[in-house]
Length: 310
Image 1 (spheres, rainbow, N blue to C red):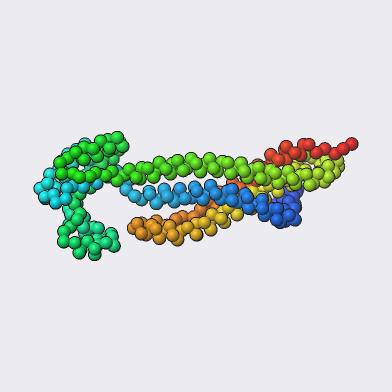
Image 2: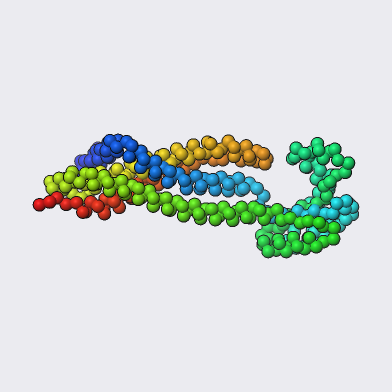
């Protein structure tokens, strides 16, 4: 199926201008590479932070988010005292389940998950106290959990209580704050990309002032004159987005190995994820759009100031 003549002519004109704009960029390799590098770094920085936050969220998503309270009993507490405290804890509000961990069970678990198991075996007595592992009911509020910790700490025979969910809540709050900060940084760096491309196009317009005046003198429309500069901005943004995606992939490769090893030390099978095909395309599209926007603003502001004399 053949395209209509007008559409085919329009497509040929745009293809010719796009290729010509790419040629103009190639004639200034050092300056063009510098502009692309600035765009690439500006896009890569927030992308790296966002990817880090997403990976951290994925790493913590598999952890049990149900709040738990660890209650440590007095050293040498009798079996009757341990059972009594377990029953007392089970009768409190907001408690879903209570598991009694005897000193012997605690020692076995410690030997399995720690390199110090052989050292503990040399001791005459088991230094670990009995403990209660308490799982709270779903939907328990933070205030109620804190009140329950206070109530458990007041029971006779209890030496220490610890809300194990608190640190994860703090981590989630930190990640939420970091997400807001990264969004602000991304906005500022996007503005930087627009300004960099706009300044580059402004200089390009100044260098081609005579050519623009002649084109307008022989009847060239503003759209015709504007077109090559828009494609120049588009190419800058496209190349910058491609460079940002490459930097992001390299960063993941550098950090991925140590991060995966750290996860293994904590008994997790987590592996850091890269941007993937969708993330790479998103970076390229964002870079292209910002480059085109920067060029459009610069052309609209400076091209109208150039008119042929006479």
